Image (cartoon, rainbow, N blue to C red; front, side, top):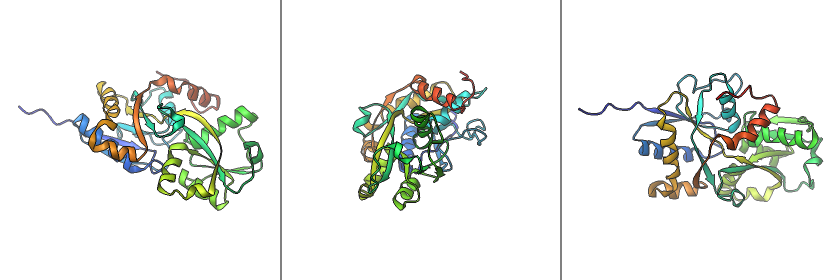
Length: 279
């Protein structure tokens, strides 16, 4: 008797096109091959992940695997009935600052011709951010402002641009004065368009932040998260995916667990963004 066909898994990414959609397409195909399961992929470009009042595709059973920003993961874990669990492996991207760790940074950019030397010089400036669920583009700024100035409303004005790429364009156009950009996104855009470096300057960098988590829906078979973790750790060893993923900035994957997000959880709780932690 033939074995019953396993149901299709549904993945969703909130991290494209900042990180190329091709990256998640290749990762999803590799996971499908490793798990022997069909996996579909959806890209939601509206935010870096579901938070307060947003539609939660994991609670609705519409998404089984997710690539999202850590504030969203921590919010979904803080619900009275958490809807996601962490896959215990994180992406490691090419950046000498990462030192082989699953981390990234917020690179604060200004126009190259601005003579300002410090964040303090922008108290009357306009700050641009990609969306209010982003760690690198939004919450990192709130946390840094609270730490340095005891004032999360330090800038004269804040503008939501809709994406890291749009924030970069707005800085270059002079529509905003500065923005905090995911370091892996910035590296990707500089690989694609090296001349961007001529018009931009990194004022300072915040981090490292723990890498954006891969999650699975609560209620899936218990072994799925570990199976995904094992498959991810083999990504750069597989001949048919290694070169392509390295070309997209991935150098490997490394084990992680929920403790790497402890500081960010505490910071978000301090900003009133999370409820009591539920495990």
